[in-house]
Length: 146
Image (cartoon, rainbow, N blue to C red; front, side):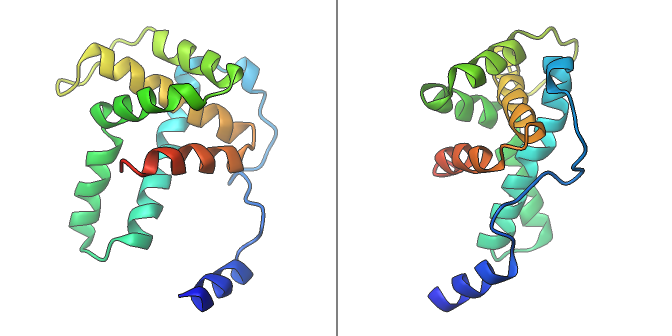
């Protein structure tokens, strides 16, 4: 197993970066725009974790992904994260949580939806700022529950 880990380390760059690596003034984006990209960033973390760790069919991978990226789950993760967020991240979370949205899913409460939006805003903010290592740290912290 250690040999595989070492081989993987050699095949991947030591420092990851954004996929579309153009400058983006994050300060110009509102919390819902941050949540828009953060939703995808969070989902790709979940999908990558599942594809690397779960030997199952694509259908089962999809079901497991949906279970982990839904509002209810993201709300639980966000409440767990609050104590380890920096002041800057807490501010983004608060803005995302308090953003006025018109569409709340039928399978989630308003509280859960707002918490999930806050979490997604933090993921979007950190991603667009290029803080990939911090994203990993946050995801690893909550992935014990995933």
